[in-house]
Image (cartoon, rainbow, N blue to C red; front, side, top):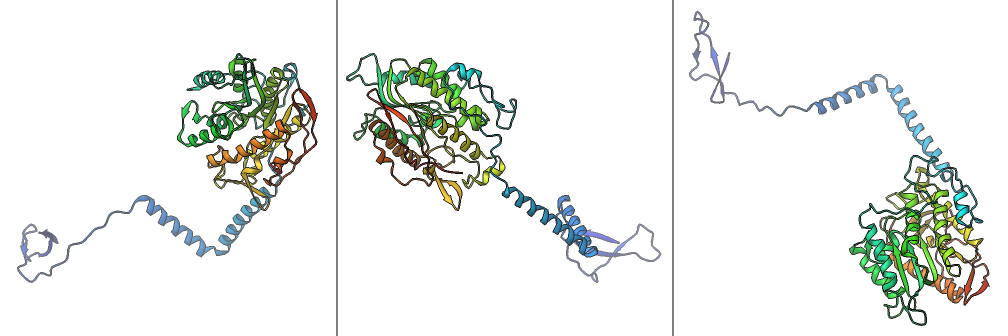
Length: 425
C-alpha cells in the first residue's frame, strides 16, 4: 500500500494481527523514490498517424510484392496522363468561327448570329454583354464621374490654332479600358501611385505639354470597361461630332474575354462594332485596332503551358488573327500587334517579361515606355509615311498587311511591310 507524503513515497507495512484500518509508518528504513514526471497526452491525430504508419508497415511486410505493384501502377498512370496532356495541340476552345472581314453597317451587326456568347460554348455560364447594344455601368463606383471627366477633358485639352474654335483637334485619340485610363494616372477615377510615372511619360511624349513632343493626344479610358461600355461612352459624349483627329487608337476587348468570359466571336464583334462606330462618324480618319496584349494566370508568366489548362493565350491569338484579317481587307483600318515586345522566347515557349507586365496583365512604367515608343513609330508611319521607322528588331514573327491610308484627302495604296512586333503561336 502506498501513501504520498510531501511528494515523497513512503512504504506502509501492515502489522500482522492489526485491524484492516490500522497502519504504521516506517521510521527510517524506507527507500526514497523520485517523483514520477508525466508528459502531455498524445493528440488523437498523432495517434491516428502512428496507427496509419503501423498499418502501412504491416502491409509492406506482409505483402511486399503487392505494394510495389500498386505504387508502380499509380506512377505509370500519372506519367501517362502527363504525357497525354502535353502532347495535345493548343486549347483554343471553339475559336473565332466566322469571317467578319465584310461586315460593315449596324444592320449587318444586328443580323449576326454567333454560335455562343460564352467562352465555354454556351450562353448562360458567363457575364458576356451583347456586342449589339451599348451598355453603361452607372452602378460601378466612379464610372459615371470618369465618363463626365472624359467629356470635359476633350474641351479643356483641345487646341484651336488654324481650326474653328468650336472644333476639337487631336493628332491621336486613345479609347480603351484600364491601360488607357492609367495614362491619366488613375484607375476608376482614383489616383494610383504606380501610374504617376506613366502619366508623366505620356504628357512628355504624347501631348503638347512635353518639350520634345510634336503630338497632341488624349487618353479616354475607364478601368474595367468592355466593348459594350466603350460603345455607350462614344454615343454619349466622348466622341462629339466636331472632334477632329488624324488617328483613333483602340485598346479594348481584354475585359470582354477575361472578366466577361465572352467567346472569341463575341469579343471580336464587340471590338469591330466600336471601330465601325468611329469610322461611320469620321470616315476620313485612320482607326488603329491594337491586338489584345498577352496575359496569363501562371505564376511563372509562361503562355504555351497555360493552353493545357484553359489559359487565355490561345483565345487571344485567335481574336488577334481575326482583327488582323479585318484590317487587311478594309481601308482606313490598321492592325497593330506589339505582343513581341512583351514576350521572351524559350525554345518555342513564350513567357511574359515581368519587368514590363508585373502582374502579367497591366503595364508597368517600363512597359508603357516600350509600348509608347512603338506607338510613336507606327503613328509616324501612318501620318508621315515613314516605313523605315519600323525596321527595329522587336519580336521574331512577321506578318504582311496592306493599309490604305489617307493624307490631305488623297488615298495612298501602301505596300505590304514587315510587322516586326507580331508573335506566332
